[in-house]
Image (cartoon, rainbow, N blue to C red; front, side, top):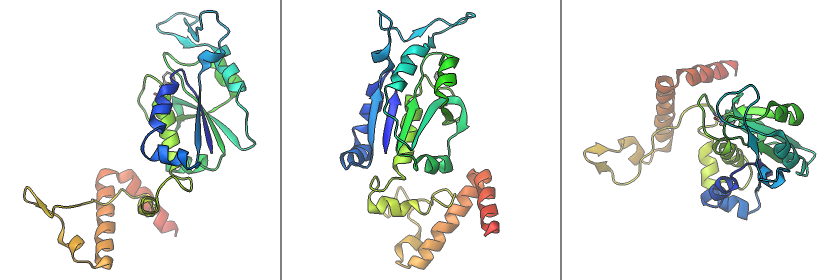
Length: 232
Ligand code: 4GY
């Protein structure tokens, strides 16, 4: 898998991918990340990448030429998808993440300021994805969300233990509560069932906690879960 990220701030992408699990996975060759700066492709003599909006209004609009030329400099693989990160896109969820993980190249367009000249969309025709109904200052954090979530689906990113643990969440329920030492802290005890070594009972306790938690906090997910079980 290769992630190609068009961004005016490549350092944001590179710094996140240089630590922790992203670092280990890129070092192991599970995926690679290539940040491309449209500023390196602008034909403007002052290296400008944005301009004032036609029709007036506040802020700056990302100009079409630097983005399209940067995009066209990328060597496209046969199984490639291009994604624009914006609040106007389809909401990202775990199913979409799994879908994206089947490509071998994901090209992402990150904007800043007031947004993209509409002709960038008309020429590149990206799939548009949103990470939630709120507005950020740029598309870099959403692009990193895609990289992080998709990379977790790739063989070799997570260790053996981390990937086994994921199974409990993949059925659409929230996680059960976790505890580690000490057994008592400020009078708060770890539930006894977790200490008795009976794995059947422990699994039942955890599953029950998942159900309770999901019903209470995310009734929408709980409903979805019940329906998926009814289908089976
Ligand atoms: N929410 N989901 C989001 C965002 C910032 C101006 C276009 C989001 O995906 N992207 O808020 N993006 C804007 C900033 C240009 C992207």
